[in-house]
Amino acid sequence: MATQSVTIRLPDPIYQQLKRRADQSRRSVEDELIEVVATAVPLDELPLDLAEAISPLAALDDEALWSAARNRLSVDDAERLEDLSSKQQREGLSAAEADETAVLLRRYERAMLIRARAAALLKERGHDVSSLLALA
Picture 1: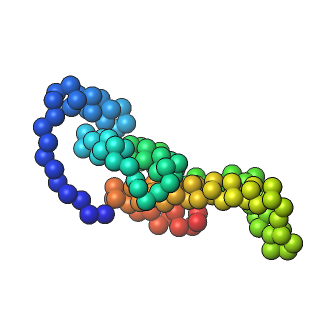
Picture 2: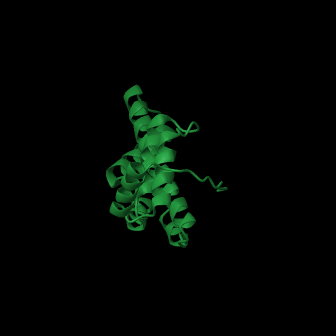
């Protein structure tokens, strides 16, 4: 991702608040400020619920990001989605089953987006994320 440098003067109370937040999350003040700006500038390309799901990731420490990058759809949801997909191919779905499939697919998309964004952040922070490919 391309980056731009910006120099700003912050009033001391704002800087101190950012510093406290950065210290609590074991991050730099710069990373904390990037998160604040990223949260304030909406991600237009994504539906709001998905943008809100990934926007807090930048504030996480590396351990939490690794956890998010390894997170998966629940076993029950994955099995149900597979069952519905098979049924759809065999005989079609009822309206209720089609609605359930749409909900499960949305959960799957959300989980994959979170995993991908967490992996991207880890890579940006200099980590080797190749081990995550085995989880795909």
